[in-house]
Length: 268
Ligand SMILES: Nc1ncnc2c1ncn2[C@@H]1O[C@H](COP(=O)(O)OP(=O)(O)OP(=O)(O)O)[C@@H](O)[C@H]1O
Ligand SMILES: [Mg+2]
Image 1 (cartoon, protein in one colour):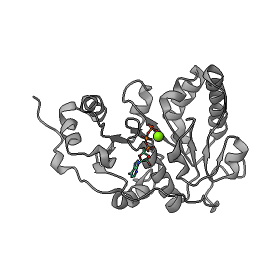
Image 2 (spheres, helix red, strand yellow; image 1 turned 180 degrees about the vertical axis):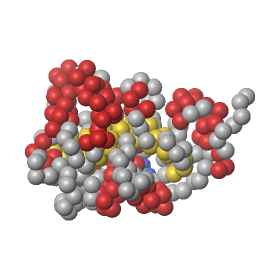
Image 3 (cartoon, rainbow, N blue to C red; image 1 turned 120 degrees about the vertical axis):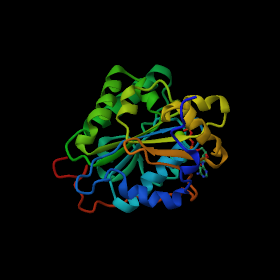
């Protein structure tokens, strides 16, 4: 077997209450002189804690940096998103009026009509958001579903992965399975967050997402899925931690603009 590159005992295991404050400071500004948005992918099976983590981080970023943020949701029912405490709407006008918000195009439609509705509403948002100095964090819950809606939306999402940073946009995307999503997500991502699968047989696929199977399987062995533990890794530097959200996600109201040029900028 090839030499082990990752030494499990060297990976710090730190609760999010300690790691989070530092993360939210450096996310997208490792070099303070040249802040650059950084995308994040969050992978984990159903119920592993992806949304809980993503919304915790978005809430922390609001509290510390007051960045404009949009949580895009399409699931018919997602109790975790209510814990954000942000207003819910589905129009561009609504997004402009709420510095942090949940964009959730809810509908009673089913099947194809439902997908067509989601497709139109998400495309509308992504088209409007695409402008210089957008300075926004946008999260997509289950990005594989969005990519499946139409070639148009898939192309737009690809463009977001490749070029959104130049508009000041950071993407946070969750996904239940490591395989199947467009390769842009993986190659353009800066932070990979991977929840440990409950079932041993799924661990190999998840391990391969982080690198070599033989390196990452032992890392999963020391993680507890019951505690919603995850690996967080900066893909460029290789900095890696094991963490878990140890403080409850409770609703916090959105903030007002504080002079940062964002989606409230004069031209928009
Ligand atoms: N760190 C945590 N502490 C306490 N409860 C948690 C934690 N993480 C997740 N949970 C709870 O576990 C459940 C599943 O979490 P969550 O909704 O984040 O899963 P998910 O990975 O987004 O699942 P899905 O793929 O179905 O959307 C929720 O009831 C959530 O409140
Ligand atoms: Mg979820």
